[in-house]
Length: 207
Image (cartoon, one colour):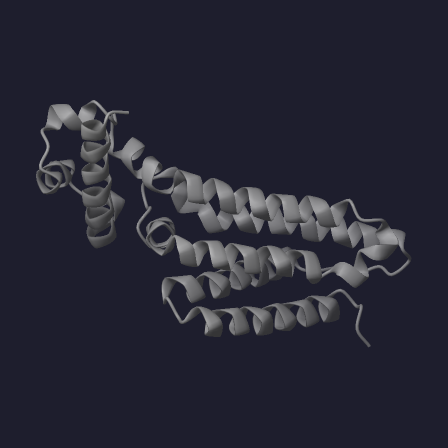
């Protein structure tokens, strides 16, 4: 890409980030973005064919990274021998969430767009998708406990959904409020300990 084209693209993306952060996807105006960027509407459409495509360009990479990291952590845990899974319940997902936290702090504006300003885009279901992945992982682990002769008592599906959703909302609060990274890392560690102990109790794995 020529320098002039790259400069135009950078101006569009910078203006779009500002507009989306201020107004959210649905209320953001392409006219304002183009005006702020100092380019013509025709120039804009040379790069993106819609407001949706522009939003995607801002956050798609970060969204995909989170989903890949989280899905791979779930797969890594599921591939452990059954007898090793109880002892590694918190370590693999904990390492993944710490990695995701560090990554999010490197891309705070992008994650604020996803978490707070994405209504009307495919990204608005971000937390729901993570909850779905975690729920499947939980059910797979319950089957492992059954196989090991350590079955869990029945867990109410509504309660399960509330607890898993609450865990992710707690995690993303750290990012939304931009607390100092050192504090966020400490709170994440405490949060993980809290939820791990709670799940072990519910699953009948604690005395």
